[in-house]
Image 1 (cartoon, rainbow, N blue to C red):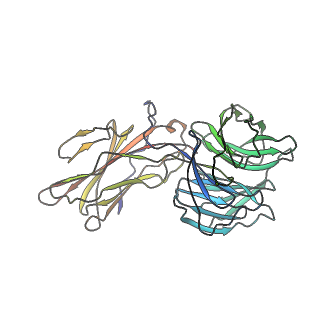
Image 2 (image 1 turned 180 degrees about the vertical axis):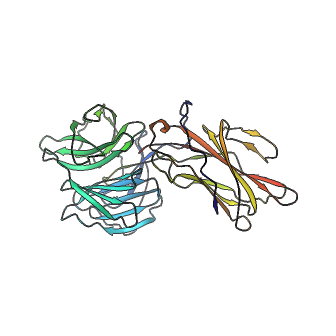
Image 3 (image 1 turned 90 degrees about the horizontal axis):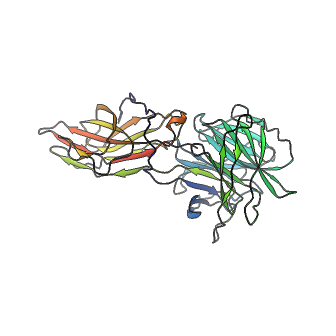
Length: 401
């Protein structure tokens, strides 16, 4: 395995955003310990899985946060924390969360740029942990809420420096969003009422944010809603009209947390080989989610022919459907509007066991949000006669959580 040098940084361009990947989805832990995935725009449950042995929720406790670096969901039942992948396999096994003092976790959030996991508990204490396994506590502070409401969700817009807390007034049956700054997360700035749904919502138990679209996603356990927001000096945000999804049918169980999972990249074209290049798999993928602040983001090629030279082309925009064949390539190049070509590098290993990593760090730059890029690998086999091979083209959109 080797890494092509990161000499090409993704730059903001004037090209209009093009959607070249799957849509984002919502992920939430339920009271019975099931992880549910749903489509926010279609108000549709997509599926669910059960992490083995994960305990059910404790009282009003629970939380969910998406980790784009490890591509998994952090989940808590209130006092136990774990990270699970797509099939509910543990990326970090369950561990008790200390320092709660009898309180329970009611909200989780991952701050990608800061490399931190935040948790709010039922005593309104904000806990800061790292993203290790198990997470190590780094500090805490008491959020200075004015009203004695119930806190049931946490989301952080790192791009614009906003913290959102979900608060519920049991006396009036009203939900509110409290804003704070990332720099001073325990100092509330504004109390913003959530416009009601029909029938009325229960207490919000989970929040998620899309910082590029400036949309809050929320759940009262049974239903999900979308709340657009705008930036306002002094209070950081104002809320727009609420778009409410109906409660899903079936025995899914109410959710106790919510997270936004970024849409996944798409592939165009096919692999090919010619001359002395063997028919290796040439599988291309991302090493993590293309999210603003993910400085470890990159693309990866696996199953490349050993002893060959490899280049990685980066395109400004999604993969072109047809592409252009340029000799001595064995097939079409789909990374048109070429930003640059990284390489060459010599692939090690044996047979078809070559692996290539290309770092493409994503800074916390608002101008990059929503832009689409593409990547494709090209190989020159040095045997006699010379040969060529190439991967499929991968399109990915830079997103915000």
